[in-house]
Image 1 (tube, rainbow, N blue to C red):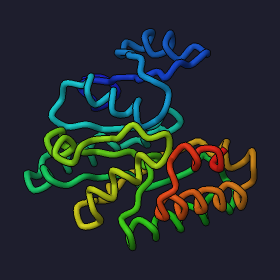
Image 2: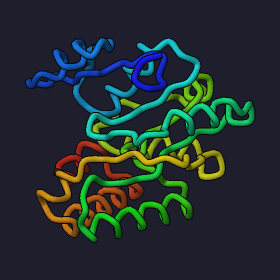
Image 3: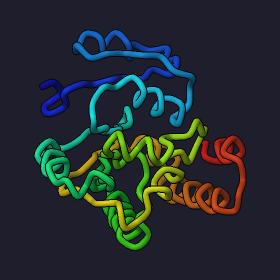
Length: 201
């Protein structure tokens, strides 16, 4: 076992200019390269991995202690072979705005089953492949896949995925949340991801 509960870790580098590769290799994990873009990189990671279950986690997200137990319990239930799970959304910020956003995300997930990639995604490989996997989208690759999973087949694990709040702090919570909501609305209206990416910033 590596990474506190994962049998295999694959880091997908989209052409970073920092020390991502060196740090990952020093930690003893496998590093592969893929075209830049979350959809392309996530799909490449799934292809490169060997396990029957896949757990996708963004580079700026850390799973809190106890995540492995929550994952193991979900995987152990045969009924979940055609379901998927995400973690509870959290930000590494003590601001009141961060807590408010966390509550809004939790409400959105319960009501619509609309989880973003910063909540991670746990899914059986067979189910992932049946759904067609991640598409090579510049943005909204997570929403695209979660919509194919469907609200009734998406569970919320009792553990948090803690994501960096740097993007929210840099532009301000209101501006960042507004941009996110605008991109989501335009996506549902059929705007192409490359247009949304320019708005997303």
